[in-house]
Image 1 (cartoon, helix red, strand yellow):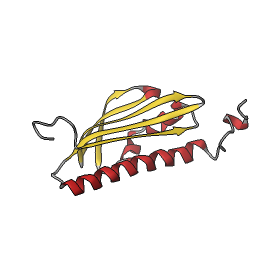
Image 2: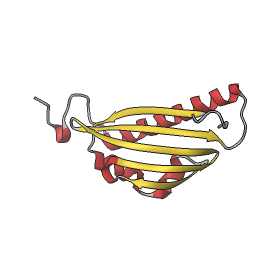
Image 3: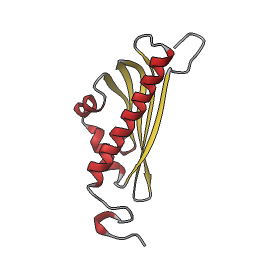
Length: 135
């Protein structure tokens, strides 16, 4: 980030609906040991633990900045919002910066879809929790 530009070089935003309660999604991020599996090149330190509404971290390692998982209760599930605002630890060309932004956006979606697959446990579209059909 330059002295004249306060915007981070990377600003990644993603959201995915998971048909499970926020507490179920929060549990997937509760253990700090899981973070290194999701973000192996980042060192995360919680600066706000919002319980079932998510976590906010400072980020070090390959990137320097902040990251947030916001869990919003919607209908019978959760919208998993992901925000990453950071700068690369080293200088990158514009081309490599675009590649890094794409990589981070794809990784965020992959994490969300993996959690969706695991946590929804085969729940079919249009079928409510425990096999009920919404009215």
